[in-house]
Length: 314
Image 1: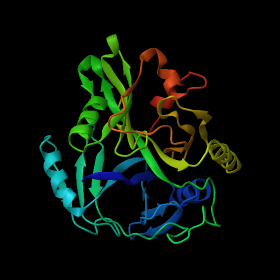
Image 2: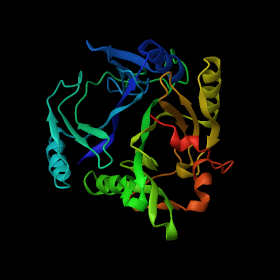
Image 3: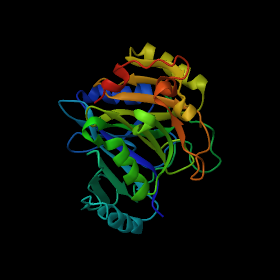
Image 4: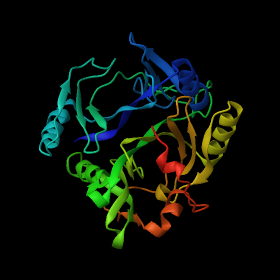
């Protein structure tokens, strides 16, 4: 019962044509729908639901909402009660509020980020089908991302004034949505403050992550690739397309993932992420990275964390 996986993310973009070109030509997605308001819906080749990314026209970059798919429609009612029991108001959105999507729950996380839950979305199938499929389609473009993997959200963090939305989100996701924690970064005296938290609802190292900052926002949306070789090829594709690369190919200590960070034309940070890392399970001890090793937890090779990586986000 309950949450299965990330369903989609909706982000703001300032130049729709340039953004669609980026997500199609660089990330490797396909446009599946455009609505009357000019919002563009895209999917990766290995996804079966109709879309996983929604681009909305705006005068600024940033985050609209993230949505997770639940197993059954009846789960929405049970989850609405659990969310409400945590003092969070839940709005019920009718089927069709988003194209080809069933009814949804809409609410704000403790951090203020908008989240939605849904059970139904039109299934269009992967690009290789479900009968005797080939390992990849013939028309793979760009980095050839398999699927939208996760997102990382920045949360207000000011422990001197008793504010830690990372910890509040973590408790809410565990208690109300039945996620479990895989890893964390702790800081302060005796590691008293949770600066970063990685949570899963599957066997992946994370389905969502939270990091402390000055304000709430979107740090990145991440797309899955097969291997380290694919990460390097993605870097070549970004260079060919003059994409602004934020962090060159490297490895995380957290999640053990292989990664490259880059920006879309509006300044929303993207990631291509490879490697399963490890098998996440509810009975696996939580991995804790201490303050003195925080740099290595994020960039394992150098152990150096550039300030802009956690201060620049949309």
